[in-house]
Length: 344
Image (spheres, rainbow, N blue to C red):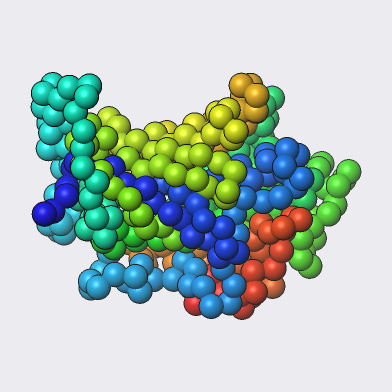
């Protein structure tokens, strides 16, 4: 039996370190910083050591010739683009099922190994090469500042690869930060690595591997994933909208910690966009907001812009793909320094 739009799955995200987690979009480095003051400065994700493949080539994870790009000549890509424009059978199935179901109706569990994440339009579009423009704001609506990572958060960039294969999802991120502003360096000239405050930018990396561990045939909850993250969070992701959006929420001891909306869209020129806004809370009060603006690109564009951004931000080779959040703060990744470490 093939399960398509009528399964609920629990994903386990495995980050090297190793802490088990479940989330469609694991909490990333900016959200981690907001947590430091609350749980003894302990980060909530780890990334891999020297053997872990980072941004790399999405083809290394899939048995296919190439990933989907923005080419209008690609029939498969055109089919995915059409799915972003109008609801598919998932909404119709859910509506019909909700109308005919009763409160006491039960749904059978299914074999998680049979789950195919690519059956869901939102998961299909998570795959490929993404370049993002990011901004991170504190509770005062001003760009976030960090005591341990003295780089700019008002405008920085991210390079992300996502891969879907069967019931598994794999993500690799490289975040690039421009040099800190001169006025900030005048009062705090700290850096990570060997650069100079106000002159050199820096990078951080993040990774998550996820696979379905449970599933259920309830059609009203098609494509949902839920479960623990980092041993202290409860997470849930719902597929919403016209097969073009995901709502991801994180709870800490029963209290809302983060609510993140991801929306997929297509420009008149056929460019696929992914826009995310992550609201973070503490004891019911909003304390930060992340605003991600991402575009799907082909492999050549991805690596060309990665190299150009490293140059534009004046990031030293010794700091390229060298740092990650770890126990007690920022730690060395163990990867080879330089752009080759990002693609190993």
